[in-house]
Length: 533
Image (cartoon, rainbow, N blue to C red; front, side, top):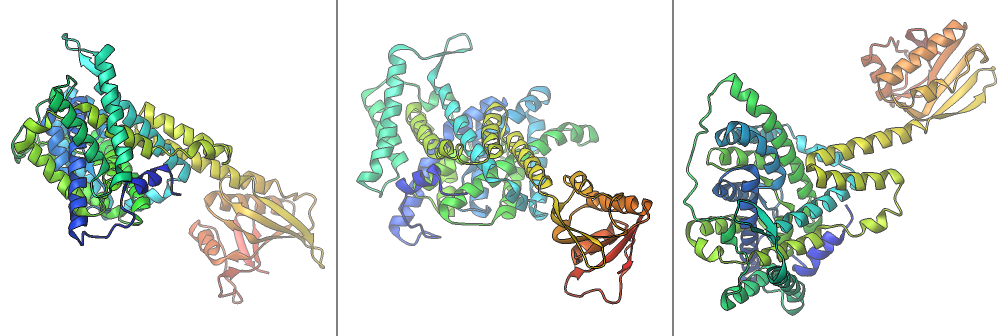
């Protein structure tokens, strides 16, 4: 996709040239500090998504660590960050509520195996079928979702198990700290690029809050992140057909959602880092990560566009940054929880709001006025569905609408230039593809009752694409035979020739058939394609 506000944001706050691997002390420092920034932003996200799924916060943190570490090491795109995500959490809710967390762990293992199979079968290449308008809608919808998720940090416990919105000075203080964090992130690159701007924002605001004892929500208010190393744990579920019937639907949906979000994020990160390919490798990496996570008490995960943008905007370009993020997160769980729990949520919200600003494709408003109406509808549709439901549904809907629009446009392109040869034969020179969408228009081009005894259909500027097209040709031949007339096909390419044979049509080869990929002058009779003329 063309360089957008997303790429411009990353370019503004990251080094101009990023090596494939750290080759200097400065590059090494940048990668490690970028990983630290990402790890700090991962903590509240992982805890929040664990709450959404109805599992213990450590299940989210373990998923962020394990999925993040494994995909960092073997994933298809250096610079990407993976972990527990909201897109997967909302799918897990009913499974955990109806059957318990052990069934979730089993579903995550199966999810991973499905993703590995998708990678081995190289199904990741089908992400190429996602049109640019769908990508724009995905980016914009996800930016809105990330922004809306931050609003939860502006709510306080009401003492009765619920939450109420902040008001008065607490709200003013929270907003001021968020604005301060965003201002630091914006100003920092203009002062120095030696230190990641998001990390500077978090560090300075955290120092102010802790130093002056400002009473604002902190990470520890969400939940304690203290824990031990993730331990190997076989899901405690019956190994029978009933269990498979329960987890399989969830596993398929989780695998699809995880791969779609991961592969779209892979494309976005690739646009910024100038890398291509790696889709199948990313599928396998996500699958291995989730399979392992399911056996270590994690809730599973996939690529995270918000944290990936934090990483690349902080200068992270290699596997070291993502690996460092996962290891820092583990160190927070094991040793650093007292310090990390004191970080104000306002600082992390400010970082994520800057991610929203950088992620949203602001040129969309200009593009909407210039692109075809169908593309504009797809952009808005995918954005709205992403916000209202989930990413997978939005992308599938966008691809379907785009495909139908494309088919309709091509269906209207079929037409014929009519001429008469010296022997009196009428020639229909077909232009445009002949496929299921254009067969009606194709048939309407002909007038068997009024045409001469010999009619030639020239496909030099057309192509027979599918079985519907073959059926249309056969029906047309029957009409001409019913009127005692002969139909001749001319300039069928060799692949069309093979397609007709595969479709069960009788087509007799002649000795004078050309060998350069063009089949010339094949006569057509009712129900069969006859010999050469």
